[in-house]
Image (cartoon, rainbow over all chains, first blue to last red; front, top):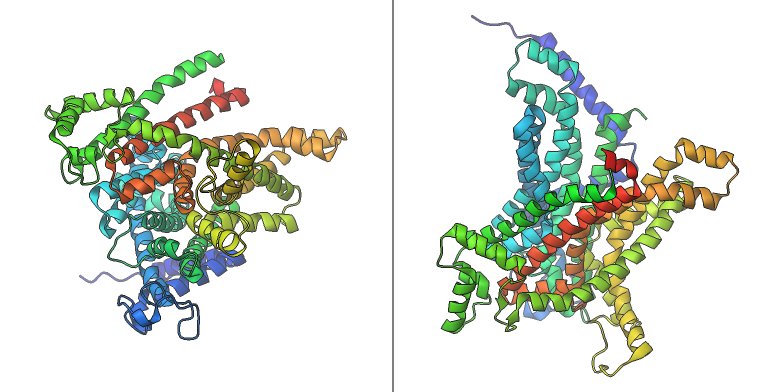
Amino acid sequence: MITSYNFEATSRRLRLYLASIRGFWRVFSKSRPAVVGLAMLVVLAFLAIFTEHLVLYNPFGIYPKSVLIPPSQAHPLGTDDLGRDILMLIMFGAKISLAVGFSSVFISSSIGITIGAISGYYGGRVEDVLMRLTDMLLIIPNFFLILIVVALFGSNMRNIVLIMGFTTWPGIARLLRAEFLSIRELEFVEAAHIVGASNLRIVFRHILPNAIYPVIVNASLQVGSAILTEAGLSFLGLGDPSLVSWGRMLSIAQLYMRRAWWMAAFPGVAIFITVMAFNLVGDGLNDALNPRLRER
Amino acid sequence: MSMKRYIFRRVPQLVPLIIFAIVLNFTLMHLAPGSPLDYLIGGGEVVPQEYIDKLNRDFGLDKPLHEQLIIYISNVFRGNFGNSYRYRAPVIQIIAQRIPNTLLLMTTSIVFAFILGVFLGISSSKKPYSFIDNIASSISILGYSIPTFWLGMLLIIVFAVNLRWLPSLGMSTMGMIGLTGWAAVIDTVRHLILPTITLGTAYLALYTRLTRASMLEELRKDYIITAWGKGLDDRTVYYKHAFRNAMLPIITVFGLNLGLMLTGATLTETVFSWPGLGRLVYESITTRDYPILMGIFIIVSITVVLANFIVDILYAVLDPRVRYK
């Protein structure tokens, strides 16, 4: 038997969806900083994805003839102590920074969403235990925990991303739990219960879509701070030694501060701009997604 | 509820947190590749057998795990964090020597950030979206996004290397050990300026943003309208009435952000070779001096836990409503 496809319902859903995107964009685009931030992110993503096609030569070699050249036509941002072009290195660094930022935030958001949703939806003993754990982890200074784990377990990219993901979820869990606590009392959730929807369906179809906004905003801000954390770790000598990262470039630049200011200046600009872009977009998302602010 | 009873009721919540920090450290030490002994010696150094025997005795490394944990916790509570073989001294002693320097740097940074941040925050709350408000919000966005250590490097390049106005390394001028009295104080202050700005900037951003938001919240309330209605002058309304109430969230944030501040201090001290706890972290990483790293981790965790506790109490002192919840 062929079930007739309900075109009308689908197109209505699509229209609603498009309308909500338009509504979102209308508010988001009103804030100039947010649009600027988004534009910066698009450029960064482009650089990170197409790095290999954009660089002119291998940035991992050693070029004794071009050591520590100040910014010039051939090397717009100068060269480093091994004669490598800083601009190329920064482009490779973008890949690493964005990868670290997104993957660690993906891990921490997944854990935070799961724990926040479970404790907010079920409440009771489960909530007590999970929230006690969350509060404990929240109070332990993050950076030092990450630092000690990377120092003990070895500084490679996998360890850094995993440990950053596993330590930064408590904030997200608290946010989502708070949203769940208020939403689970609303009528439409009650209605879903009455028509016999399963717990899983209620959590994922009904509550989560309404509770996810603060998590999205938080994720954007967290990518920025993850990038800062990775840079800080690399700066202290705990970065992955086999990769080019902005923090490591700065760590090396420290030795040449008196002779080669460009080695210190430009990688920092890259970190600064990237983190700022995520912060600006986060603020913009907050204005556009937060229903309480949207009314204004 | 009296203040005493409130404090009394909160203390038991403190102990599990501190134990949690110690257990976490213990667990990491045992989970990490290699034997815990490696992390009690550190640095891949060759040490005499007597020293290893002493460590085995002190930390009961031949006993079952749960007994080791008890021994470890009691060691930590007695201030025994092990020894640094590299320094040939107990970890607690090495850390204690560095703490005053870090406290000095943190104090000046907080004072700098608090005074300027509160001033900017209040000024911008007087006229939202005015010129000064735009400056304040630019500062707070910049302060949030700038990597601490990079700001420090830029300040060194501009003010120490090129302009030669201020020193960039350490706490006192080399070869000037003989300085006494005011000359020594001035020398230290000169060394403090750049690190203070570096560490303080993130907090400047935070305090500015927070003061502004908190002030705007207060200024909407009825008692402020009453205050204006009574014909009080600007100063009294803003500083005596609104700011006193707006200060509460600022104090809480200070407690919550102490961990972040110690992170900033670590990076700042590394850039400026400031002989504090943070610089010790950096040195211990490069020399793989694990006992010190773990000691610092525990001490920092306990400090943050205690600071949050004190802030909670302070909050209850300042806002009596909290005590009755």
